[in-house]
Image 1 (tube, rainbow, N blue to C red):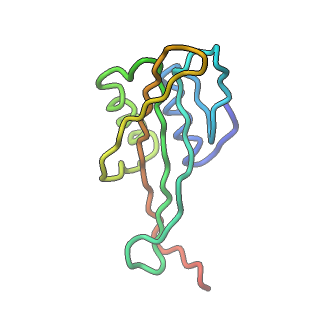
Image 2: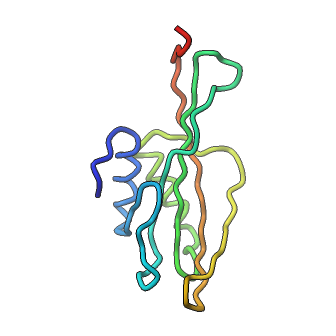
Length: 126
């Protein structure tokens, strides 16, 4: 694992507990590797509603699995992320996506989970 700290380190630690490879930002898997791993990243930093001093950090966790993601596995990941980080799951539908693994007939299923964390009283204007 890398030397990530803060929320990113906590996300990495939570995902590593599933005994699958974990990457920040992008994967370094090769086409002959098993494509069962996590990638996580920051998505955006934005104002929280109409407040001028409250901001949200949004994070994404991508579950990537050859063939399919076992039913209920995403719920285990959500629970572990919430327990380890105090992040909140974003209230929106999350879609499964599919790609073909390079030079194979395997389908890879991808689910992106999105989480958010609000920072109160972050005055960037002065």
